[in-house]
Structure formats: structure tokens, C-alpha cells
Amino acid sequence: MTDTDTTKPASDAAAAEAEERRRHREEARLIRTREAAARKNTASKDGQWAAGDRTPLNPNEEMKAAGDPLEVRGRIESMYSKWGFWSIPPGDLRGRFRWWGLYTQRRQGIDGGKTAILEPHELDDEFFMLRVRSDGGQLSVAQARTIGTISETMARDTADVSDRQNIQLHWIRIEDVPEIFRRVEEVGLMCAEACGDVPRVILGSPVAGVAEDELIDPTPQIRDIMDRYIGSPEFSNLPRKFKTAFTGQPIPDILHEVQDIAFCAVEHPELGVGYDLWVGGGLSVNPMLGHRLGVFVKPEIAHEVWKGVASIFRDHGYRRLRTRARLKFVLKAWGPEKFLQVLQDDYLGYELPKGPAPKLAQRGDRGDHVGIHRQKDGNYYVGVAPVAGRVSGAKLNAIADIAEAAGSNRIRLTPLQKILVLDVPEDKVNDVVNGLRALELESDPGEFHRNVIACTGIEYCKLAIVETKATAREVVKVLDEKFPDLDNPITVHVNGCPNSCARVQIADIGFKGQLVLDEESGEQVPGFQVHLGGRLGRGDDNDFGRKIRAHKVTEKGMPEYVERVTTNYLADRVSADETFADWAFRAEEELIK
Image (tube, rainbow, N blue to C red; front, side, top):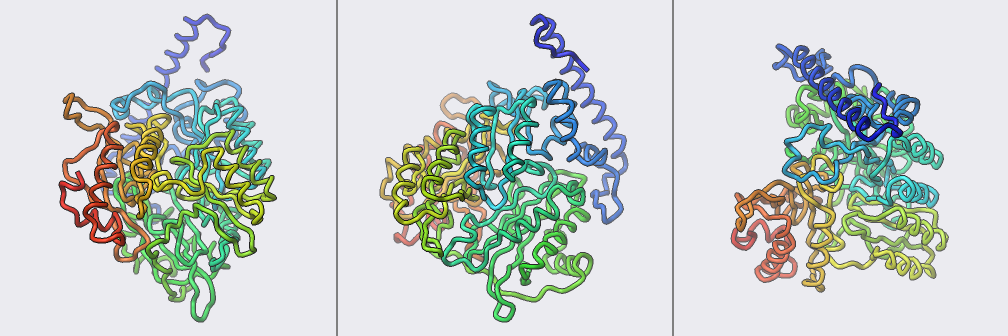
């Protein structure tokens, strides 16, 4: 192992680092060579375990076949945290670490044009992004304080609310990871399977257990799945990520159409309250809407149905190509009828009864839970909107203090990067609203403030090409001043690369990061492809949005573009009832460029 003792002369340390980098490159080359030999004459295989294809057909599959990635925690605690960053071999660093919520962070100062050019080790900084799981978006005051304190003391006060209802920290040192694990687990949280080819954090309605119109509290079902299957070797080697969502709301609030599996509350005329089952949704570069299987799931068997669907993905998922290793491709190949038949015959051993569909969203149904809302117990919850999910450890601690002073012990994160404080007595509502406002967390924000979402972006992400959080903040600043009385919400989602962590395809205005040509300078600069008119929750009218051929927007020109199309929408819509998405699909092209 290369000695990285910081007491050595600077020249010796630099030479040691250079040698370690050379070793990493050679190790990566040998892995690629070995993989190429293993994959010889396997081009006709898809890597489906159910078909007997167990040969690892790409480097990720070889890494998982070598041993359960969850076992890397022992090496983190006993070796790497003591020996330092450069002691970590590539297979653990960029592979197995994900199973414990850790991604290497982007090295500072590398522009977006280098993202697809540099080798992984050249993009790596010696720090990590860490995700802390908060399934259902549920945090206690103690849990929020724990994350906030970790952020302030070990993550340079970074903390972002992701659209998977968890908190992401940055600038994490490998030396601090064991202590972070200890602290989060001490308060009932965990980082296990926050990333990786596993069941990711389970989305849940952020108003579970408190909403006045709730049909069922899905928290017991979420907890049941976590206790039985999260961290189990049975599902720690899936073809790729597997995203789950539950809601007890009559109108779903968990973006069920774009999850691998979603359980939406419905009331069966004979069997009572349970769930409608959806499978096979997903976005990224090949977006697909989920399929409603038309069956009714009783709450007590939800974990069995979840296990069956996850097992189908594990056994029948396509493992050869990472670009096809999602459940949505199995659905596309099979169709919903065959999928349901395989689920019932091969995995459940019983038929599921037919059931009703959830209600469709109506005009005015936002589903973000921002504002002041009465709970079914007579208390209130207060929902606020951080700009693009950006908060900090200090703010998390302050939110915990505000909640506790109001007599609350429950904080929730939402799939739309919002924060709720639950269980606020009526006479404490103003205290909570004003306390959060002092933190720039508004319960009555402007429309663009309320409706902007952004991924991590080039600030920390190795896949990103453009800046996102700061760009989103500029959009909010400019547009809320320009349109203070906007009477129809316009959602703006900003993604730093061609993937869709920020769900660009389902926004009114979605920006997908890429390099674009600056007409003034004639040079390639950071910018975006534009998607317009994405919409969910409308049944047969769901759509991924309209792309404008050959039209790109530069990063600097993005606020001006949003202003222009918003102005055109307000001038050209047929009535105040016409949504931006509806207008975007019928508008002349010159109005949306």
C-alpha cells in the first residue's frame, strides 16, 4: 500500500500520489481486459438470471459477482478510514461504496466540457457525497439535528433536500465516515442502500398519517419492506436501481407514473381501503410511463407484492447493458398482462383481485403540500420551499429548533424538494411560519420559487455539464420579480446532464444540461436542451413534453428564455384555465423558442 503520510516532503507526497494514480489506471485497464474476455461471444445474451445468464457481462456485474457490495462497510471502518483516500481501490471507490450512500465528488475547477473526456480518477475529488436515507421523507427533531450537526462539523455546512426525500451531504472525508454511520444509526437512520443497484429510499406521501383526506397511512407498509428487505443479500444485487413509492392520498402525490413500483391508495367497493399497483415507470434518457396493472393490493400483503416485483426485476432484468438494466425495459418487452401473470404464477402463488384506479389530479391540485394546512387531528402542518432543495446544516438545526419550540417532533421532506413541519398547534402556526421565513424558507413563495427543482449539478456531480442550483436561484429571483401575480403555476426543472435526476421530462419547462453553441462567440458553452409541457396525474393526457428541434438555450440565457416563453404563454393562452403544458403543445414554434 502506498504510504501517504502527510509528514513526508511535498515532492515525495506528490510522487506517491502520482504513482497511486498510475496504479489505479493500470488496475482499471486490467479489469476492462478481463471483462472483454469474459464477454466474448456473449453479445446475444441479456444477462437475465432467469435464463441462466450468470456470466458477468459488464464491469458493474463483475464487481457485484465478486462479493456482496454491502460487505465494503467492514473495509471502510477497518482500513480505508484509517489509511486515507488513496488506499481505496477503484472497485470499492466507484462501485461498492454506492451501497453505503457514497459517491466520489467532482474535483473542483473541472469545466463541463471535460465531463465526458476525463477518466473517472481524473474527475474524482478526495471527498464524497453522502446520502442519508429517510424513507417516506420522515425525520424526527433528533434525526434532523443529527444530520444538521454532521453537516456543520464534517460536511462544510452542505445539505440538499433531494427529490428522493433524503438529504445529501458533500465534502465528506473517508476518515469521518465510520463516525457518521454511527451517529445516523444511533438516531434510527441509515445510509445502507441509499445508492447502488438496490432498492433505493422509498418515497412516501409527506403527509402520511396527518392529512385530513387520507385514505390510509402507508407508513407501516414502508416500514415492513425496510425491516424485511433493505440491507438483505436477497436484493443487494439488482440489475440497477429500483425505486418504490407509497401514498395514502386519494390523489397520488408521489409521482407514481415514473417509479419502478408504486402503491396508490384506493377504496375497493367490497374489500375496503388498499392500494392500486403501478410498475415500470422511469425517466433518464429513455423515459417510460409506468403501467397500471389494475389489481388491488391489501395493506397486509403489500410487502409480498413488493418482493414479487423486485424479484422479477432481479431475475429477469437485462444485465448486459446498463442502459437497458431497468424494470421499464422488462415491461416494454412483456407488456402489463404478461408481467402480472408472471408475478402471480411464479412469485406470489395467488391472484390479486381487480380494483379501482386512483383519482386524477384536478385543476388546482398541486400535490407539493406547501402552505399552511389543517391536519385531521386539528393541528396544522406548515410546508415551505427551499430554492431547488438547497439548505444547510445550520438551517436543519434551526428547523429542528423551530419545530421543537412549537411542540412538534416531526419533520418531513417531499419528492419535490420541499420541507414540512407537522403537528403545529393553531396558536403556534405564526411562530413557525415566521421562524422559517427568517431562514428564507417561505410557506407562501412566489410561483417560480415554489415550482423550481434542480439536481446537484456541476458543483459536485461528476456526470454534470452545467451549473444547476445557482442557475435555478437566478430564475427564481428574476421571474418572481417579473411575474409577481402569476395565476397559473409553471414548473421549472433544471438538470445538469442528459440524465433526469430533476425529472425534466415532466416539468412545464425542463432543462437538460449539455454543451451548446453560443451564437455570439461561435464556441461550445454550457447550456440546455428544452422540454416543454410535461405532465403527470392526468391519466391518458400524461406526457413527457415537447422538444424543440435544434433549439438550445445557454446557461446564461436560461432566465431570459423562461421570461420570454412565460410572457408568450400569458399573451397567447385562450383563457386563464389553459395550463402552460396545454398551451405549450399547441403553441406555434416561434412562441416557444
